[in-house]
Amino acid sequence: MKLNTAAKGSTLATRIHPAAVVEDGARLGEGVTIGPFCHVGPHVEIADGVEILSHAVIAGRTRIGPRTRIFPFASIGHQPQDLKYHGEPSTLTIGADCMIREGVTMNPGTEGGGMATVVGDNCVFLANSHVAHDCHMGHNVILSNNVLLAGHTRIGNFVILGGGSAVQQFVRVGDHAFVGGLTGIDNDVIPYGMALGNRAFLAGLNLVGLRRRGFDRDVIHDLRRAYRLLFAAEGTLAERVEDVAAEFASHPQVHEILDFIRDGGNRAIMTPRDSTDATA
Image (cartoon, helix red, strand yellow):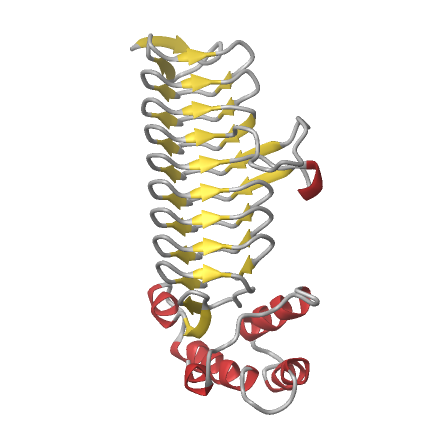
């Protein structure tokens, strides 16, 4: 590889393979590595320490955060797969320390969705996963192989989506939720929830994830009790939300769930398939 200095006074060299194409106007930080047969467009911004291995294409108004790694045949920032898109200068922003594996596709936003697709820090995208236009994703999210996010979806922090799962347009998935493999998500998934099946149903709380992330046993116990009350057979969901809010007035994790439900307005919340699923 030939060595290019990213900026005057840089301490780390940017390495661009002779077989790569970096168009005039692209902005590269220090210590960037661009492998053979990559193509970087003129409006792309790549932060310090990013590594693009080979055969990857970075297009559009795309910003890539520090130390992110992009593997072969990824297509990042090409125009949205939306027939209403008419060339507006929308953006794709990817956070720091992400891993984007082979064949991943990510699209920028559209005028109808706020003009931006946003991915947080420390996210992992396994082979052939897809992030559509106007998606907003938190930090520490994992998309397993072949996961499909349709346009306008909202994915919280510490969410894991199992292989082959698909999330419908405008659906929200709350913090710390788990989505099983081959699961079709067409309703919002509450924070800490676990969604399984196609079409998906709420199969309890993500207890494994809660334990792995160090949640206290008492917190988990209260979340389980609140879950059972929220999805009990008596009353309407709105009534149960207010009852749970009163009973768990000083419990921040429970109120994350309640706020998520309230913020959804008239959006449908995923519920248990039957009473046995409400045991969490």
